Amino acid sequence: MNDGRCKLMLGKTAIPYRVKRSPRRKRTIALIIEPGSDLTILAPATAELSRIEAVARRRTGWILRKLADIRERAHSQHSHEFVDGESLTYLGRQYRLRVSHAGTGKPSCKLRGGWLEVVVPASVPMRDRQRTVAQAVQSWYRARARSRLMTRTKIWSERLGIAFGQLLITSPAKRWGSCDAANNIRINWRIMMAPLSLIDYVVAHELCHVKHRNHSDEFWRLLASVMPDCERRRAALRKLGARYSL
Image (cartoon, rainbow, N blue to C red; front, side, top):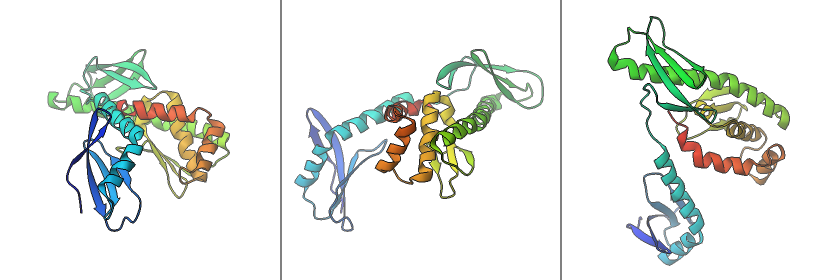
């Protein structure tokens, strides 16, 4: 049974929400906020609305922070056009895209000074050039990720005293990294847009999952033992992560 849409007043702020009830949920009440949707409250079938709102009010700080984070992400995200002069980010620094059309063969992309230079063969039709530039840029980021992330993973593996399986460069929509049951570390190539401090946070974070599969107190203590400012880096990645997209 689902309640209709309601509004929760947090000071002068009205927060739309809806309640989803389930007989399988016995006692706990959970709050979920996803981009593009209202606050959803998961509750037992018998929970009174007054109790549900009381739980939500106790989570006021979390609700407001989550909504602000979603707004920041929505504001930060934009689609790239992959045209001459456009700004792209690599290792936390801004570079200009310089596109030229010449010669034959395969498209190429390389970093030269403050420019990310892409050469598209003159034979590529005009209608396909933007897509070709995008593919060349993404291939360049992936190649940089393979070499740079392996170096960083080995460094943090030694600092933590933790061995890992393989390093795999991936492209998930919502995750920066993961660690599987075989201790393989997967890192999203888009993290190469972030400063090195945030790249190291993702790498060390996933290595710690080799020893601790969840985010227990032991996990955070292990990470903090080699990265005392891990909470600051975590917060920075949450705030800025939406900008690191192509």
